[in-house]
Amino acid sequence: MAKKATQKKAEAAKNDKSKDIGLMSPQNNPTKMIIDDSGLAFAVYILYLLGYFTGITAIIGVIIAYFQARSANHLIRSHYTFQIRTFWIGFGYLLIGLLLLSLAVGVLILLWGFVWSVVRNVKGLLALNRNDPIANPESWMFGD
View 1 (spheres, rainbow, N blue to C red):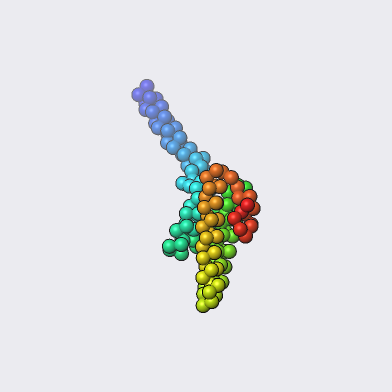
View 2 (spheres, rainbow, N blue to C red):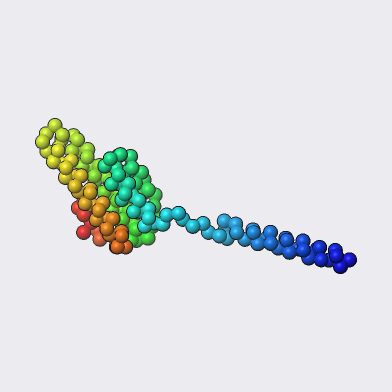
């Protein structure tokens, strides 16, 4: 009889341990993000810089910026806004420059658009590294 009581206690202890494993369900143990918001903003700047060679990475970068902008804090949201505007204004410079390429002014517009976007991306990277927001993310120039 004492043996059966001991076995029941052992089984109860096993059941308690299996219940403990249930506490590790996704509901009770929040998942950790692989990359935080500032890491994603950094990745978008890098994707934009790689976009000069590939093109497609800039499109991936602007998609990330659009999806992440709503849930980001103020500091990171300023970077996402800056990045989105950098993409679209730069795309505008590219289109206008290509359309006017037959004229000498097209080459100048393409050159200006390239320098403009490099400066914006570098300034954004440096501000992000200092944990500073972009002062004026909706500016047409360099966010100052």
